[in-house]
Image 1 (cartoon, helix red, strand yellow):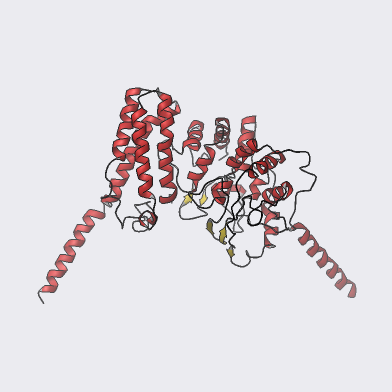
Image 2 (tube, helix red, strand yellow):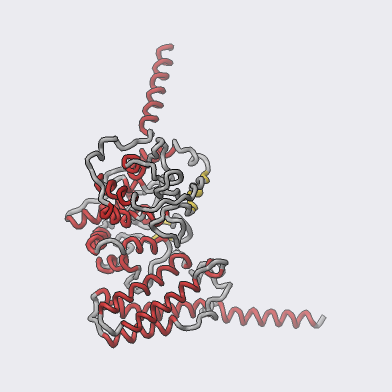
Length: 156
Length: 291
């Protein structure tokens, strides 16, 4: 009979650990890591985009740095934070990542790889003048749209 | 007493006749487009503005110039399957005349006189000019044929009765524009938004009968093809600058450099093919929305 209390203690301990990881202030760490990743994209895209839009002067050094960051972030191995069990159905309050990402026939990985390629290409030309930067910027934007079209839930 | 009965019978017949007349499937008069010659290049611009490919391409990743149909749309009224509108004579619309095409696009009437369901946004396309319809048809004729067979819609009663669509059209299909404009740019923007790009079909909430609630024009609405909401575009909902809106339509990037998703990603692909002037006109229209 001694086993049952031990088992209960273990279960309770796991539940506490799980709550600490997933609940309260924290949120799901994988979802938070993904959102941080996207924020880094957005911040660096913003620097390039302001130049593309004509809201900021083109600056070769700043453009090269932002595009370099974008390519570096895109090249990160993200497999630990795109984990099953963290979709918009699993965590409706936190996640907008549609379950289709993890389903048979998902093209999310493929889109991610071509996005990383487009970002690397942008990084290689972003310092060569505004026109070169703007023309490589389009392919990066297409990558964002390709993934968000099929794999991100609409906002409520 | 007998006279009263007769009066009622006559009134009843008149009411039925009027109802049938009101809900009849209307077609484009055969001579309306005579003398107009379509220009396929101009038609391509109409095609992208009107977003035909978003629904009629074979799938979300399909080639936008192969209008094979087959995409499924789950709605409150039932399941619609976009038909094949490629140039195939048997499975598509390759055997149509320009008048058939105009009747379909602007009046929602098929060549055999049936009502189309308003999942096809003809209530917006109703405002399309004759010249644009003829140019669009000229462009359609340059597109490839696909022999993909059509799939039937699956609708519940009474929506499965096509005749009921006649009443819907009487209530909701209108060639009048919905807003007042004061400049040529706003005129162009209004034409693009209210006719070709049919933005209101998703961004305006619908009545219980599925018509656009024009008193809440561009006020945002539940997503017709999934979860979540389509955002409102009036000043109460959207504070972007005109430049931000035009840039978003071109690239998909919001002012915060988030990017368009869902159905809007396809819209951005289409809008990216318009001229910068047309995107600026749409932005000007949106900035001028009341409320």
